[in-house]
Image (cartoon, rainbow, N blue to C red; front, top):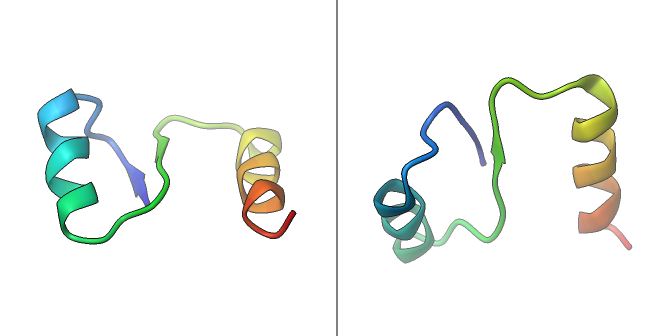
Length: 41
């Protein structure tokens, strides 16, 4: 999930909804590629 929400309560709600990982905006292209790479490693 990519989000602008950085509050812990928001990430907890997302996890309850089935989100398994987060990246918080703003993020760089390199950060995004690394996060995607972790998903398929």
